[in-house]
Length: 475
Image (cartoon, rainbow, N blue to C red; front, side, top):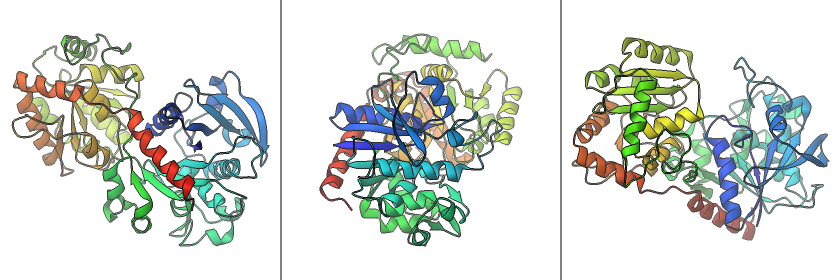
């Protein structure tokens, strides 16, 4: 089975969030399962700087296709279009945080080139059976595969976050040379705009998203972002598959980035990691105080305003809170103000630091994820592996990967709440605080959480089944 992964991010070369992690880890897991995977990625300036050798192997629509290999050994086809991708800044935004004005042209061409590589019109000798695209940046691939390309591969479209849809003015239809008939309600048109994501969802042979619960949620108006009708019609083609994590990288028994290693049998190192965090951030060094951490984009979606609403009460109850992340300026300012008001109990690091993210997982008692919606989430899985019990809203992948603690703490691995409000969150924190103050119960919960496994092999097997089905009965 040959599969072409098409995505705008891939760790370690380019990453803004969980998409980059998935596109790095899932192909490697699929390769171990016997699937022949290659990744198609834009040749950004940041990628160019990190790749030692990327030889030219073909040209498509004026772009140069360059071959390289990820650190995992998975081959990559990098689409080299210097006028679109060779620039400073991020994959979607310039250095000031503004979206690139030509994102439609950039990812429009990228999607079309990827489709050609998955058809009989490809100049490459390697030809995939399955084209597998990720999020809106790849969304035009299935449209082209269904409109005019010779002997196209079957297509699978994965939704990582439905809220990001790639919406552009309708004049881009002509600019990109799209068949005019595709700009329709039964096509890529979305309330007077061209939607890259809707194109992918409409034309792809099959659809997946990153957790079973999210697959259900996006068929409802609350989380459907205007696409719930299309997704309900395609419910038979839609599968929710939970993401995995790299259990070699996220393992407190061998993590080189943390202060002291530990495992479920001996958590003494976790106490040392906690003390190190308290000292680093100027918090009161007290093992009895429950340490809560957040590693997140500071946005409305992630529920940071909900967390802010209980911060004072958490401190009054004896808790501490460390925040790592960046995002909306008003939320950044609010978190900073809380840290100034409670210097021995609350701290903030605005920005991102991979080493610090590992140390927060290792040193905290509890991990906070009050998301209004969460397609999958990864930190709740990292946290359980590190014995840091998640406190999270029961939505999407959070509900699929956290077992809620029962009344007496005899079962479960975290604390879930339903209502997206400070009151709802406080109910979960109060339950967590009660268990924390009973050290034997808390230790038992911690050991149970650390025994769970979230490997990519389970997810890879589910994807391989879908590939096999598509190869037998392409759309």
